[in-house]
Length: 160
Image (cartoon, rainbow, N blue to C red; front, side, top):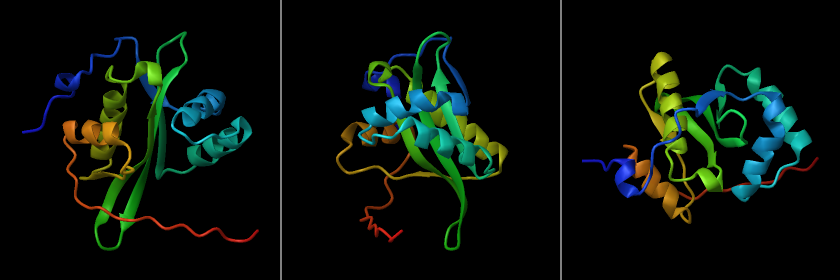
């Protein structure tokens, strides 16, 4: 049986928290949250990336906001067709403001993605989580995800 996230110390988010699609105007706040996650990004780069993502139906970039207050978090997901596994949704990034963590914001963002996936007739959500992010592991397990694989990720920079 999966644990309820509230049993892990999370509290309910404010009823005023709203989940919506990200806009180019959110770039500065999203960049601020990226820095909290350890991935500094220039606002101009984030702005350009949001514009590209917004034009791609396979991508969803959602934000959690409380009107009149900074963004509380964001989630990026991608609809993927994998030859060996079929179609599914993969969480590419999820960041919740340090001051808003353990208050249900991440759960709201993941729930919004789940609703989108169900509306698209996709039966699985996948997420990769760095081995050093213990809090993330607990969050996903409490949210009904199962650990199915451990792997290494390799990257190669290309010239130009």
